[in-house]
Length: 145
Figure 1 (cartoon, one colour):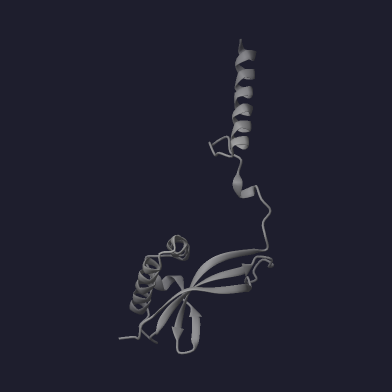
Figure 2 (figure 1 turned 90 degrees about the vertical axis):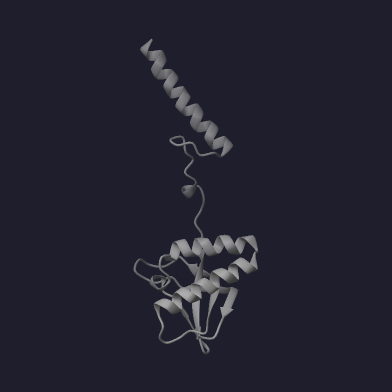
């Protein structure tokens, strides 16, 4: 009897794992671990906000857009950008510009731009990833008050 219970448990666990792999579903603990299921490329993309001052552009530090951190803000902007709703994206950029101006009044910025940045991940530990390409997604320019 005990042998049948142990064998039945093993068969059930293996069957559930095979079903999850074949159906490509995630039912913990029978997981296919998708983050390890592919080959990592040497590049990754992210969204980055840049401030505009004259002809100069500079990355906006995440600490200037509280309560957002870089990952939350990037994720939120990416979701808005994917919908194709340019009105919502412009409103989000205006809000980011207002927050940045409130946190860092000097020197004033004239606007803010959202870029999709592609970085090279083939770097040694401790090195900074290099920018492979940069695509302008949206811009919000309002003169400082």
